Structures are given as structure tokens and as C-alpha cells.
Picture 1 (cartoon, rainbow, N blue to C red):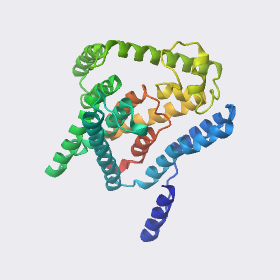
Picture 2: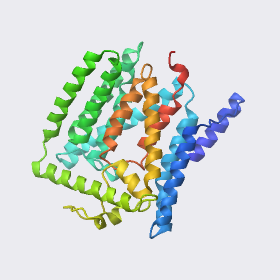
Picture 3: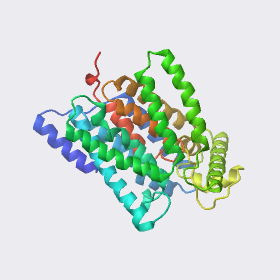
Length: 346
């Protein structure tokens, strides 16, 4: 992938007779995060294995950020990237629904391999849904574009429904809430009413079983709390570099929480996973990047509202999943920071 990018970048530079790389504080911040996470491999019992896992996994996410950040220069580049992602995820959603209904015949959405888990699938669908609706966000969209996006969004929503993920439903609600907050940001009475409505909706969502057994939901909740407690305990005892990259599954039982699940488990929260494995400095950098991204996405909401909505929804979803080392957060950050500010009206 990196080689393909370099060759394409050089060919484009030769064609345009212009060689230009972007340099920014955001990339320096991301580099700092990558370096700190790499340093955390030095405190593990098996440094070689941890470093191999780092370059095989997390390093690719950092590379993807740089590739997208250096590639997108205007609206056309942006539309090409998000359009390709929407079509790819639409295909995955179709395959997942077919597999769930006609092959596996199971209650919750399933696919294969790394995308087998229904919660991970739901988070990916939450991530892509605002981009799948990009024709509806913009004026002067063609009828074909609107119909295409409606078909893609319908299939993706069907996947979210079949995943039966509470985090995904909460993310959908937060996506709608942040968009309404932006639209009515100057109308205080409307915002006050929205806050009351939000409290009611959250109360209702907390009681939904989504077609799952109550014992399954309670067991899931108790285990998730246990993983979070273990992650916090790891951080308190190892605040600088954590327990080391990729080591949460090997250490979580040593930190006092009780569980009903066995085997290697993860933190079930991107924020807790990062701080427990790489320490407080890594979390500070990551949270700062997200805060800056939210500020920029808010500024861009007038021309590219899908960025603000996607960041909100996926930010909620990843708070209940261990996605901090995956591609998705860094693709989203790259899209936000690379979107041309010249598109924003003064």
C-alpha cells in the first residue's frame, strides 16, 4: 500500500511538475503518539513480539493517516476517498446480512475473520453512515446520487439493526443530537428542549434489550465494567508507559476485577485500552487529537456535516470497543484534518 502511494504520488508530481508534501502540527502529534506507543513495547515481557505486533498492526493505521492526509487536496479528492469507502462498506453489509440470514442463520449480525463480531461491524457501519448520506447533506446533488446513497444507507441501517448493539444505537442518537445542536445552536429554547428530550431518550435506550436475553445483557455489562476497572488499575500502577502494547489480554486478571468470561480479553473501550497499555501521555495526545478534530469538524459542518456527525457517532461507538489501534479512527481524523478549509465560507 505504501509503495503504491509513493509511486502514484511521484507520478502525479511529475505530471503537475510540482512536488509538495504537507507538514503540520497534527502529523507531529500523531508521530508523537506512535513513538510513545512504540516505547511501551519496551516494558513488555517479550519486547520482540510486541514490536512485531506494533508494526504489523498499529503502524499501518498511522501510515494510512499520512497517506490520506497527503492525498486529499480538494473536494474531488475527498469525494473519491469517501465514495470508495461507502461502496466497500456497502458490499460488506450485503455479505454480512446474507451470511447472517441465509448461511449462519443466527440472531445477531456475523461475518468472517476480523469482522466476525457484530459490535465491530456495527461500529464500522456507524463510521460510514454519514458519508453514505453525503448527497443528502449537499445542495445540487443529482437524483442518481441521492437514490444511490439512500440504497447504501438503507442496507447499512439494516446491518446496524441486525447487529443489536447498544453502543450503535447510542451512537445513532448522539449523531442526531450533535447535528441538531449545530443546526439550532443559536436558539436557546430549542436547545433546552433538546436536552430534556435527550435525557428521556437515553433513559429509554438504557432499558432496551434489542431482542437479546436479559441474562446475556447483564453478563455483558458486568464483564465490561470489570475490564474497565482492570484497565484503570493498570494505569494507576503503570501511569507512564502502561503494561505495554498488546499486553492487556495477558494482565487483566491480575488487577482485581471479577469476570464470567475466560481466555484473552480486551478492554472494551478504546480510551481505557490505550491508557492501560501505553500510559497517560499516550491518552493525552490521543484525546487532544480528537478534541482538535471535533473543533475543526464543527467549523466544517456548514459544508461537510458528515465529518462532525461521523466523528461524534464513531467516537461514541469506539468508547465501548477496542478500536484505538485499528484503521477507522485514523482514517476519520485524516479526512477531517485534510479537508480543504478553503471550502468553508467566511
